Image (cartoon, rainbow, N blue to C red; front, side, top):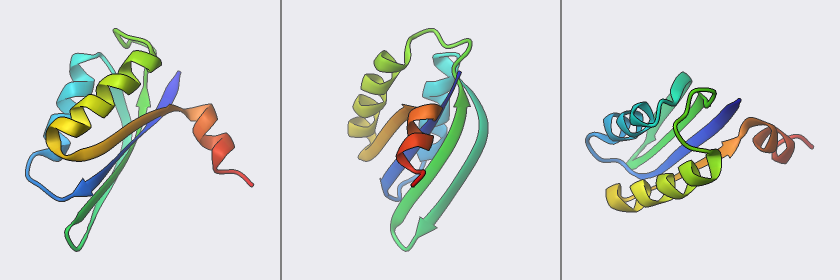
Amino acid sequence: MRAVVTVTGKDNKGIIAKVSGFLAEKKVNIEDISQTILQDFFAMIMLVDLSEATEGIAELAKECVELGKEIGMSIYIQHEDIFNAMHSI
């Protein structure tokens, strides 16, 4: 099972380390990652594998939002199928 993680907000040190560390603790594998900085704004999209995750996607989604608040970012996770359905018109 794969999901898409999006991270956006004001650029700051350690964003990738904090998010990837959180995912590693939950046994979520990052399969692909793209990040960019647009002036002072940070944007990152990750494709992750949840097949060995220690928690379900609903719990991970709540914890991603909480982590985002802690580090001043917006962090969301969506199942890959839902993400694809929302972005195919």
